[in-house]
Length: 516
Image (cartoon, rainbow, N blue to C red; front, side, top):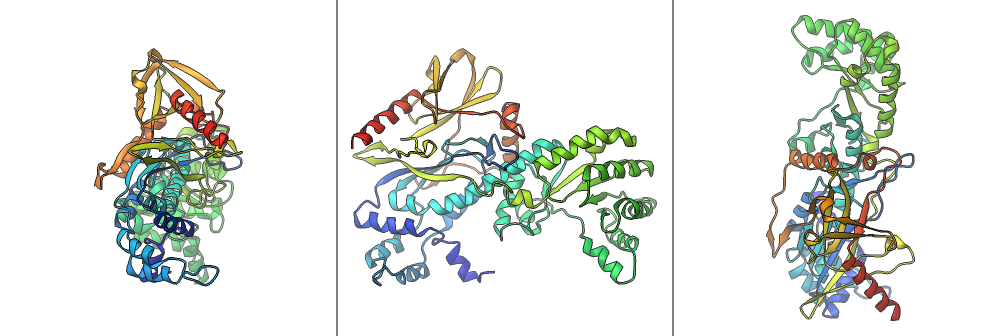
């Protein structure tokens, strides 16, 4: 672990990429460093996990990023470190006048920020976070923004997909031991936003206002066995200390023939003493088959409300397979499938905290406009790869709720456009200009502007909601999303479009760039 001083260096102002610093010095030398610009953060593709793919994402990470943004500035130690950078010829890379400027202006307090709020459903190519302000500062914040927000979006999305599969059953985030260093703390926050009910990570759980949750490890039983005692002895010792929080891991020796009957013996003792045992945990084997057998045995012995915690490399696809198998096979053991499912708790670790199969979001940070002579001049990036082309100018994003009550499209408009005043809307596919459709006003139930002011003129314009409130936002957005878009495998395409005015602007800029 880095010493405190080193953390201040690596996670403070110098948590940036080299190219941002060298560009900032160039802009300073050219007198462009205070030029007003607008950058936009968006992602290009949904997470693709290989055997299944997301059809939506959940926004997360904004509050932590804003906290970093407002509390970070260049220190004298940072300046001294930058003085040691050398060019290829051995000369100082950063000049004294640039470093003096950085000493005074190395902060992000002059930047304005708009964003789609956390918890909202988001889609590719839609501006999520918009930075507006002096060029050098806007460029220097790129790495921190992408690092902090992209990761939380990724984990919130994974958690949301898991929660959609388990419905009302609890999800516990178990990933701290398998995640990427202390990034797991941000992952826990994102998982809670996405739908995880609790986490086993103690410190961050307390910090976020949630009780940490967990069971015990196989090592506890192994220890008792090594000392000449039994699995039953281990269970009894645990239950004696934690009579009202007793969840026993039963697969260390033999799940059905040892762990389960020993757990029931302990539960019977707890019951006689007036306590209610919480449950058992299964961490290996055919989890669906073992769940059914354990449920039948627990019912037979009078523990019909005792929970069954499942863990071991779970993700949304494996959970769906487990639930499907239970629904198909439970009746063979004389138990009701829905009652079995209603007693399940899912402990999801590695595959959630690492977003296994899609370990990075394709989030990017691109310049969209430059202010010149009092006017915003749109910018455009061309590319032979269609999805790498950018959308020019200042924008607002409108979510279209059609008469069905479902959100069917996100429409990217110029900032000054008001689609609510139009009799019909023309939607042009953001990647394919020849794909268009029109929606009559009478078929639109509502238009929801997504980007809101967070910081403007140095003042906070937004009150950050609690995680519970963010969850409510997520749930409402998902209710308005067509079932096919939320589908686990081969989700339906959600339409992201540009307005006719944006399309005309894009066409003009492309013509101008091609002529040059």
